[in-house]
Image (cartoon, rainbow, N blue to C red; front, side, top):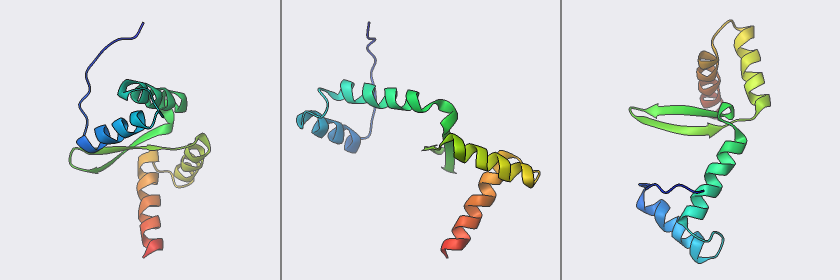
Length: 98
């Protein structure tokens, strides 16, 4: 049995969902949302990192198990936490792009 609930979403995303339904990619907004949630559930919550970019802002970033293992190895080699390792790698990446 499917459960009904309401969703609030940015207008641009709603228009995009409607376009997908109009193009018959999904049969409806509900079908599109259900598909997306199923895909995220298959990825697994352990493979999703919430990156906090600013006050009250968070964005999910999807990572693979091998990337988590590499991150943990990096952190262990430096005796730092996983969170600190992420900060170091992001900062290093930003310096490399300059």
